[in-house]
Image 1 (cartoon, rainbow, N blue to C red):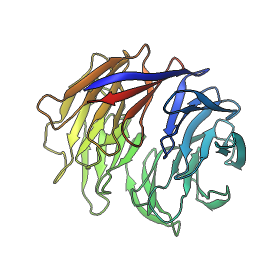
Image 2: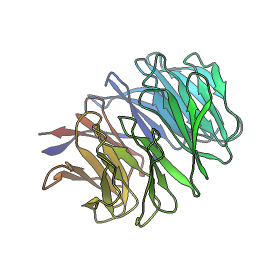
Image 3: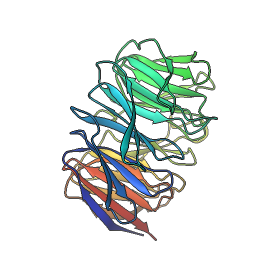
Length: 336
């Protein structure tokens, strides 16, 4: 297996977020300084430049099945952009706090955009009307994630996680956690909800029961989580190795994790969307591909000139985008 450079693009600042369009034609990249750039996926040409947010952008997300790109920034607003026309479509004010988290519902009957700014959380319709504004969270919202079937969104803050129903807006369940939470992830089968924590640890809930598991021993805060498409493997950062837990059966408690070695702290993990390869990146610019189920899991390596700030697989799993701290976007092709 080989990782080959497909193309590279330059931004004006730290690459804070990346998002592939569902049709695979475009890669959107958000600069921490504010502007948004749309690259052609195949040739890397700049298709469109959007002004983004005054003060800086924080997050981007494509509306499923459309050319609408949502963005959130330090101006306290969610903005919708018509990427085909290259223009601003609508703005949804969220208040004075930064909009730091965005996620479109992929399951369910219709798209809903979940957005958070400070302690505020809302569901936004594709026409930019607010579908539901929720009561303020107890603390600043630090992560959010839609259930794979779209029935609820998990919202994390210091002290716990709440599941908010997509249709009725009701609080379905609350899970207490006595520390800061940096990341949330659902297993694709919806069986596990996982948080990456400040303490440092990984906490697993099984929302369909009262099962809770705590996996500790990390060297630092756990900021990155990724499940494989089959919901068996959970990859995590938080150490110099990428730590992969086996979540099959009763879960990872009592099992030794698979430790995938890097020479510097891991700064990103991302499983493919439909296949089993895991990409992991470390602060020294190393990028590695792994197959956790294999006796010799390492499949390919590459070296970036700077540490990765974000990783994103294309929807057909053939291309891996890496945004770096030094304002570069690299797209690598995965070839067998």
